[in-house]
Length: 366
Image (cartoon, rainbow, N blue to C red):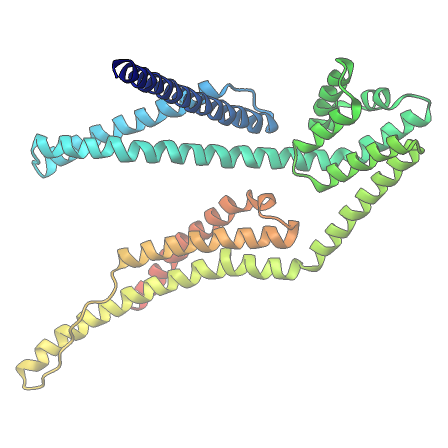
C-alpha cells in the first residue's frame, strides 16, 4: 500500500512539475509574441516614414513626441494653477486633483493628437512624392527606351537614364541599381520600388516592363508605348478638369465670397434688431404710463455667440468645399490639401472685413 501511495504521489508531483513547465513555456511564448508584435509595429512605422523620404529612427520620434507632450502639459498646468488660485481662490487639494486628471487624460490625448498630425503630414509627403514620380515617369521611360535601342541592357539603361531633374524617381532608381548590383533580381527590385507607392500608373508600368522582359519582346518599343499612354491619360484628366471648371468657380465663390458677406450682414442685422428692440422697449415703458400696455420680452442670440457660430460655420464650409474642389479637379482629396488653409484664411478675412464695413455703413442710418 505504501508503494502504491508513493507511486501516485510521484505521478502527481511529476504532473505538477509538467504543468508548471507548461505554464512557464506559455508565459515565455506570450512575452516573445508581444516583443515580436512591438518590433513589427516599429518596423512598419519605420517603413512608412521611409516611404516619405524621411530618415529618422522611431525611438527618437517617440522621445520627441513624449517631450513635446510633457512641455505642453507643464505650461498648461502652470497656467491653470495660477489662474484658479488667483481668480477663484481654489484650495490646493482641488488643484492637485485637477492636475492629476490633466496629466492622465490630456497627456494621452496630446500623444494621440501628435501622432495623428504626424501620420497626416507623412501621408501627404508620400502622396507628393508619388505625384512627382508620375509627372516625370514618361520622360524617364523614353530615355530608358533610347538607351535600350542603343544596345544597353535593361539595368544599365535604367541607370544611365537617371537625371537630376527627375528628383524622387532618380533617387529610387539609384536604390534599384544598388540592389541589383548587390545580387538582387531586377524584377524583384522594381516590384519592391513600385510597392512603396500607391500609384496605379507606376505599378502598371513596372508590371508591363517585367512581363515584356519575361516574354523577350522589344523593350524599347514597349517603354515608348507606355510613356505615350501615360501622357494621353494625363491629357484626358486635364480635359475633364477643364470641363468642370464652372462647378469649381461656383463652389469657390459661394464659400469664399458669398458666405462671409452673408454672415457679416446677418451679424449686423442682429445688432440693429437688438438696438431697435431696446428703443421700442423704452418707448413701451413710456407708453405704459399713459395707459397703453406694450411689452417686449425675451432674449435673442448675442453678438458674441453669433460670431462664434459664423466662424465655425465658415471653417467647416471651407474645409468641405476645398475637398469638393479637389475631388472635382484632381480626382482625390489629397491633391487639394493645399486649398484648405487658403479657403479658410480668405473666407475668415472677408468675413471680418465685411462685418466691419457693414457695421459702419448701418451705423450711419441707425
